[in-house]
Image (cartoon, rainbow, N blue to C red):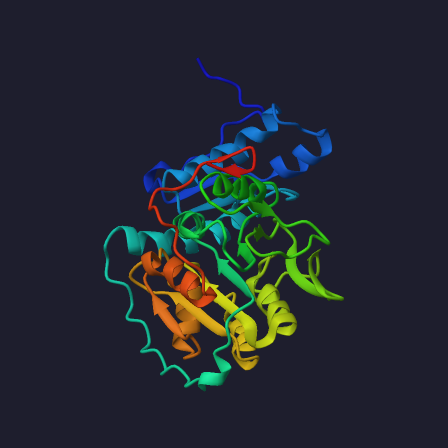
Length: 323
């Protein structure tokens, strides 16, 4: 018997490429907000389903368009989203040889006095990012001395679910960013979907700001917006990390981090789902380190001057306390 979905149709699973791509109805965000959905609301079904798909290895998703005038326009919007993602993922997952990447320009030499100990970690990622973050954040010790700010290309509502999932497996709290929240050590904040995330100086404190200026690189939130803001506030005490993702969002922001004297770490091609964003930075010659995903958490901890957790197992978070 066909079971009726809360939105009148089944979410579309692209099984041919499963677990590469997951499609959901973008109206969930508007419906959830308009109807005041709570913890038991059926409108949480699709965000929860997407985060579960990501947890089981999905690398990306495609939104069904809303506010379209006709079927033809809707189909065109889906094609514009879906085709580039499928091509990028199929090349990697099928084991086909990818086009040879340009040889990275040599990294610019950095005087020793410019390699300051960072006061903040800013991470940018897209395709494959949720799983990359799920590998990195649980390795960060509970007494980590720096704040961590994250831009993951994702729509509204879903970023909150991602933060919740990451927080449950990490020693530090991971939350969706809130306007005017104080930026403190040992906390991670994820940019909310459809909002850029920035930082601003408020006397002796630094606070978060979420803004809806136009998208950059067709993205909101945008990595470039966050990185520029971090460079302006923290200058040479900035550490930027660029993980797997399509496109080149983050390149211009990394240029600003570099100009300010900050440090840049990017994920290598072999461990990336798509080596677009980190590859753009590496090929520009402005990355201090190009590392496999398995080594990035250790590099962040080393640069922060923190100690690795004594035990390799992931701590469980219960009622906000690590046990």
